[in-house]
Image (cartoon, rainbow, N blue to C red; front, side):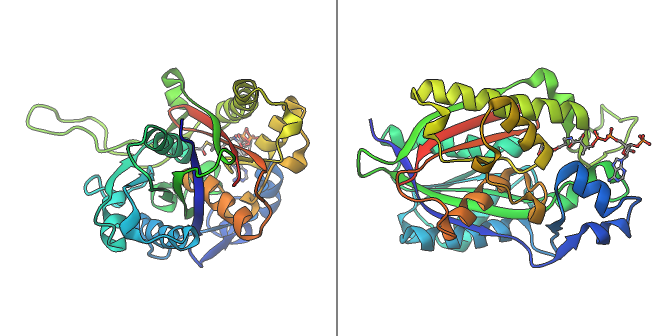
Length: 326
Ligand code: ACO
């Protein structure tokens, strides 16, 4: 069977930095509360960049890093819960801007697990010989779906985009070794972002739209810790590997305390977990791509390293990939 591997990474975040002190001028909060509860110090907030623009800039960098042309792309998948519009998709907008005329394009919705879902979907196309080169993007403008009067949510999130180009592994080394996707719709009320309320000649809604992220923080916290630990254990068993074989773990960047607890119950050194959420906050589907791009460009990861990517988020969803960097 052919393996799918990453041949290029890219990311983009808005220049505009919003610190915890900046937030304290908007809502009743403090740097001390946010830092100690979450590890977040600052986040990037769009001053006009749309999800498709950020996705495009991240994609350009990933294509350049992969040393291919946009015309080589067979497919573009964008994971997002904050598209510019229901239609057209962000992926189609990026396809047009890149001039990737050969590529099919669609968006995928799996909240903060979106990048993992999109990468596993790509791997299926590649492993089955359907497509050779796929651009996978996670991009979010979460600042447009936050209630900026709700201190329990607006302090947690940020905007940005991460991207990878995936291709067929040319050697027996490198690429995805194991992956797993999981959903638990029974816990859907933990994290919600309502859509347009049904209103037509037959239905007159009593309530109006609330287009904001709503969250049961403590339930999400427990779900996230358990998901990281369970996904790591499952992947190691699928790949017949030990935790000592793994060099790095990149989880969805939501909260440092979540990562700390997951490391503890997994009995894995916290040093193996890459963390950059102090600079970006929670960027949902973008976070894993941004982290992977940083690690790639800073040459933190090198050929032969075994890496686990783990996502968790609304749905509730979770998923993970164990790969060898090539
Ligand atoms: N600043 C100051 N005080 C605050 C803030 C704030 N920003 N937010 C809440 N508080 C107050 C609350 O009002 C409450 O006050 P009270 O005791 O007077 O009622 C107090 O702090 C404690 O509130 P809790 O909600 O119990 O705080 P908790 O310790 O649970 O921490 C947090 C909240 C940080 C959100 C935590 O539950 C958490 O990290 N959950 C996971 C959230 C998350 O990561 N979500 C996204 C992941 S999934 C995805 O990415 C889509």
